[in-house]
Structure formats: structure tokens, C-alpha cells
Image 1 (cartoon, rainbow, N blue to C red):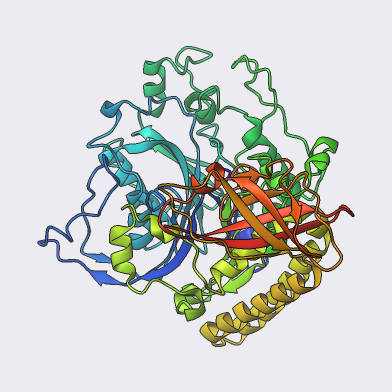
Image 2 (cartoon, rainbow, N blue to C red; image 1 turned 180 degrees about the vertical axis):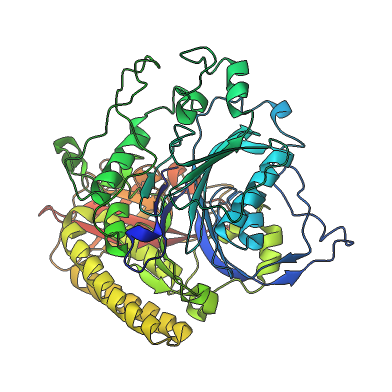
Length: 605
């Protein structure tokens, strides 16, 4: 995955509260849903209620007596709900999200490293529903890790509230390092371990490995690092760490010791890390400091990627939005690749705005949880508006929230491929269709779309500040501003998109598909398509990898503006995971070199 997270301590922000931002990047086809898990008392004598459903092979985690009302952003794959993607914000104002941090040294296939399979998805659900504060959420998470061990390969968990932002970087088994971001610092994180020295901050606490207790009243304002007491000795036993001086561990670097060679300073991660720091520090030429232990580690890459930086200027949602939409400067080679289905989004991990961005959130905390603003982009933040949402006041019906969120949560990890089929709604599907059509025309739309997004964000920021200042009706505000975004993006499409009209296709039998699929389409008046470079790509996936190229020599003109082209069925049918409708996007160039695009809904039987 290519997730990027930014956490700004409360002294670095405009309103004096934490800012937490996250690009959630997925794999393959997915759909995102939104719901509100109700406040609930659980009957622990009922065997159905006594344990949380878990992934196959993972531990069954006991439920607690009471859980809090929680806003839930649910990501669904064809095979089942996502195990490592969902975001939660509960009524106590505690936010939970995560980044992959795989390529770590513990053996991902060794069952002895965990108890009963360890904990996976349920670490996020338990913190999301149980946490009373960010620090209490850390306590919940560390207790679960100490009891069951962490099942997957490695992950960085964000737990934040208005006052504190925490990261727990955990590897398979019972080992982790948890860091509290200092109030005057900003953390930028991609998909690698970034906690280094255990004594970087004034507070460094070795916790009981079996019963970790997080001090609830200690002053962590200048940062803190928590870790199991045997973190270093375990690494020594495994042969992962040999002190430079026997008996001294001042050269211990958690990221270096627990990350494996494939994950250490991989460009997939370091590019985004450095770009984020440059934005935060307002220095486009910023370079990483020298790694003080590079020679000790025999590391040819002497750059040091710090856990956090200390900005001189305030951090704003607008600045964060620029980071999360960043493609970096396009190289000449990348420039030559632009065209239908070929965009910077194919440069996986090298950019903050990746092709499979499912949803981007900038959480602007406030004194009261109901006033927390989730600036939400429904996909790639270079295409989508950041819409101000205040979901703890209720989810507007236009978002089509879960009708029975408790049942949906119970079934989240079951296989429900039909949930990834295309749905005809104006909200999520409408913005996603805009994104896919825009990506086909990226090289013609990048500049005007950039202007639209940031003009919209500036206006929405002013409107949001006004409604918060007067304690206005935030539920009504959300409904109104969703509609504003829909209208503005539709107006942009009407003015700037160069759309072909793709005619409906007869249903396709997945069991006996044709070898080729004939697509009939009408070009905009006076335009002629080129065959070279024409593609048909599945929506809600990474274009450029989930697409079929036109069969050479198959483009035919039927009437003055109607054309047909044939595509191999294999790449198209193989991505339709269930019977139902799936959205596909035709893209190409006309003879004048301008891009065009069109949507096709294919029904599979």
C-alpha cells in the first residue's frame, strides 16, 4: 500500500489542536462505505456478543461491557472487508487509522510468535469503540498486543485526539515502539518504521512486557517513547542487534533493528517522507541530515529520516492538502508516459497521491468532539474536493450510510463480492466516476483541476470557520456543502471533460465469455479517435494495471461520429468478481492529440 500520514502537534496548528491527516491507499478494486456504530451495552453472557468476529486464523478477542458511538469508514474488497484499512472516530474525539509497515524481520509465518493467531483487524475496532482519549487508546492497543501478539507482518497505528497524537509501530509478535508526537513537532510517515532512538524525547519508558501500563497523567508534551522492557534484549537474542560497545545500547535504532533489508530506506517510502518534510518546513531544497550511525550499520545510504520535524510556520489544512495531492516534479520519462490510463499515479509509492487512494482525510480537531472537521476527499486528493464533514452530528443521508451498521460490522470480514459492484448513486459513485474520467484525461486537466480544488478548499475553510464560530447546525452545514461540491465538480466536468458516449453492451456470461468485446461509442462532434493508445479500464482500481489495450486494427467507423473498437475480454472479465454491474472507462486520444474518455457499465451474469 502507499498510505501517507501526517500528524501535527497542537502548538504547530492554527487553532491550537492536533491535526491528523491520512491517505488511505488500497489494492485492486474496492468500495468505501460510511456508517455510525451505535453506543452499546453488551451482554457478555451471550456467546455471540462475548467475542468480536475475527479474520480466519486470528484470535477471538473478548468484548467489553460498553462501547462508544463511533463513525466508521469501511473499505471493502471483493473477497471481504479490508483487514487493515478502516478508519474510526468515536464520540470521545479519538481517531484511529494506520499505515502498512511491512518488510520487518520477524517471520510472518511463524505461529509461535503470537497467541491463537494474534490480533489483526480487531486492534482498530477495539481502540475505535473503546478509547476514552488518545492515550487511553494506546493503553488499549498495547494491552491487546501484550496479550495476543500482533498477527500481520508490521503496521504503524495512528491514535489521536485534540491534545495528543500517537504512533504505535508494531511488528509480528509482541514487540513495538509507541511514540507521542511533541506538541511543537510534525510527523510525516509513509510505509516504513520511523521510530529510531528510544531516548529521542525527554520521556522514555520501558513497560512491563506482559502488563504494559501507560501513565495517564504524565507530561508527554515534549514527546515520549514507550516500549516493552525486553525490546532490545529480544533483538540481541535474535542476532538483529549487536551493541557497538558491549553493555551500552545508545546506538540502538528501532527502525534499523526491526526493519528488514528490503524495507530499510526504500525509495518507495523515503521519497514521500522527504517530500512531506519539505512542505512542512517550507523548504523545497531541504535535505535529510546525516545518519549518525550509518557507519556502524554499514549503511551506504547516509541519509537520516527523522521521526518528526519542528516547523517555524503554522501547519494548516491547506498545506496538508498540498502534500497529500503531491505528484512531485514530473521527470521527462514520466512526462512521456502521460496519456489515457497513464498518469503519475502509476508511480506507486514514489508519490503521496497514489492511483489507488481510497479516501483522504484531514482531521481538524476541536475542543468539542462534535466540532471535529473531517476534511474528506473521496479518492485521489488531486482529483477530489475536500468536503468538510462533522460526522459525530449524524451522517447525512446523501452519503447513504449503513442501514444496520452493527450487522455490517459483524459481517465485515465475510466474503461479500457483490458489495464491490457499481451502484447508481450521486455521492460516492458520482465522485469516483469523475475521478476515473479525469484520470483518463489527466494531461489536459491537471492545471484547471488544481485551481478548482484549492479555490474550493479556501472557500470551504472560511465557511467552516464561520459555522464553528457561531455553533451553527453542523448536520445541515454538511448536507449543504456536499451539494455544493457535487454542483461545482459537475460544472467542471461539463466545461472541461472531452467525453465520448459509450453505448450499452449486452450482458456478459462470466462462465462463457466471448474472446473479444466490441465497444461502440460516439465521439464529440467533429473528432476522430486514434487507435494507438486506446484502453478500457475498470473503475475503482489502479488504471494502467487493471485495463485492456485495444486490439490492433480493430477500430472501425460506422457513421459520421460513431466508432467501434474491440478489446480482449480476459483483462475485463477477470476483474468482475461477482454477478452484477461493474464500471469501465474508455480512454484514448483524438487525431488532434486531445484526450477523451467515456463510461461503460457492463453487466456480468
